[in-house]
Image (tube, rainbow, N blue to C red; front, top):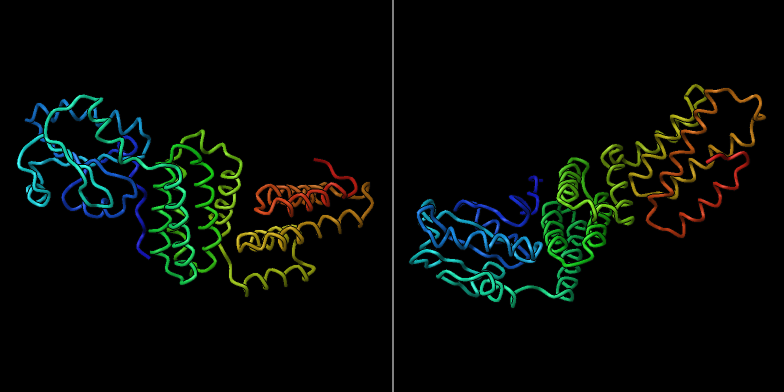
Length: 330
């Protein structure tokens, strides 16, 4: 797949300077209204308006984007949008002009110009749901490009929302993680990188949400472990039957492969079986330091997977089973 671009959230966030070649693609990708500001260095009213536009776009936190175009460098865009003079600020919805002003306005006047086009929470929820459904259909069809496009749209909606950004972003990541198994391994890396770009654009306060942290941990597991084929997973199972193989290393490798494939319950069972076999094996006094270290390493991975398990009921069940092991130290 061609590597998808990250949401337009740069310069600071939600404010982008564009060339003529970039504008069409950015307008097509935008899922919030866009202020298209034509300016020129010699235009005093343009210089007066621009700080007000930037201030309001930052205040609205992504509910509207600001695309800045140097009029002197883009004569064809002036013709395309029928701009006869400067300043010129156009408001576009879904790439279509719905309003404009071509004179110097005060901050309150610009705010009143923008306000009617801002989305309400119910609209955000419906748009986000639609994008996620499109992504699920794209994954089912193994269409990585369409899945990336739909998830990128969903991400823009999430960043533009007035609240609940973290939970929306967690839902987006979970759809991506569930869909990776439908794609060839060669196409998964670009989607993982795309997801990491979303997280890099998120505020620290957003990243503290527990549900999003769980999704982040599963994403990190995908990046570190990769997703192996059924034959490769079977080969790892076979290694456990070979006495010369270090059992803890084989158990960790198999559990990681199963978790990366989304089979968390099988991964947890492999780890728990190892711990149970050690609890009911040698007396504790005869356990070597190496065996103790192996046990603690497997135990740590089991706790890690329980913490990121999407099914919290299942997570609590395995947490109880873990605490029932004799001699457990947490």
